[in-house]
Image 1 (cartoon, helix red, strand yellow):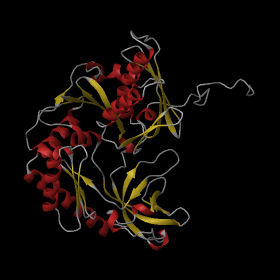
Image 2 (image 1 turned 180 degrees about the vertical axis):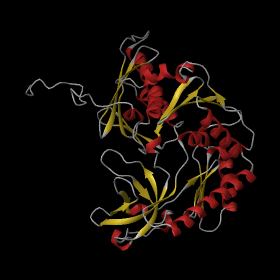
Image 3 (image 1 turned 135 degrees about the vertical axis):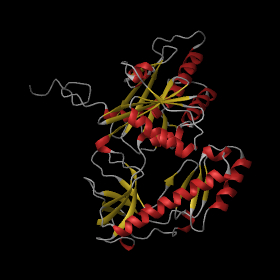
Image 4 (image 1 turned 90 degrees about the horizontal axis):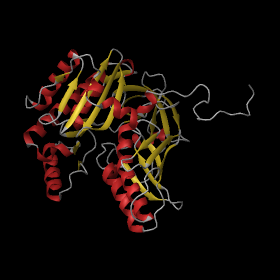
Length: 414
């Protein structure tokens, strides 16, 4: 069973997801800075750069959005030309275009946008122009994959694309068809608004942080939802009724003077799991350091001395670390390149077991990731899709003394 614990402040919403009492996801959203990912805009092309095969699009944000040539071509790979055309043959300055945000503004970069539109629902993801059916990779049984693909093909219209989500595996076809029809209507509404407004213009905003988590990870019949704000609790209740048609557990209001995160054991876990150094059950440690380009994770035996030989001690520490690293990456929403310096192991079977343990942990993550493998230096490399700014960034700032390096330069003038 999962628990969603939601804390509401006037300008900030924080959401913690617990699985069997253990914190696995944490997200926050400022009310004045609503997430852009998933939102649709009618924009105007302000610059076309053939040297970068990209264009910049004004969507009404502080920074212009970046549109790469691959995101202008047809979303079905088989329908793309063998050789990519020049971006100047596809877009021109002043052209108005409907785009969807696929990546938040990060650092000094503006949002990244695409014309490969997708609208996620409860059971499916609707892609109005993709012209194919796909099934979630987390549906493992071949006969279920084939059944869902046939169902998706029978429901979609010519030119449409659908992705059958994992939760659709045991759902009735009528519910899936209803989800598809609702998403079609939403797409028509976006098109109608695009025809009526001048660029730049917001056409459709994705759901709030609480609604997104309810849609994507919440089981209305089994999981618990706790909120410490009555208006937001009522809003969540209405959303649950809409997607679950009444078949859900009621939203629970947190009452009393104790902070909702402390009452449910979230605050203690947040303080531990967002620290630079995290201690494993065995006494080993994980140290996480983030740079602009990548995240480095170092594994140490620390206080753990083991009971057998060195290889056994090291392998046990690494296996514990692999499982914990997968959880922390998901929890902190770390994206980009990640390098893990596990303790050196002599036996190849132990090295492979560590990779398997990490991949198993990452498979529970909704964000796409890829374990690349061991480098020549014995480091394990992986990547994770970077969609939003890491959660830790919102709740931290660089030290004014050291500038974020963790060290003070004694050679600089005082």
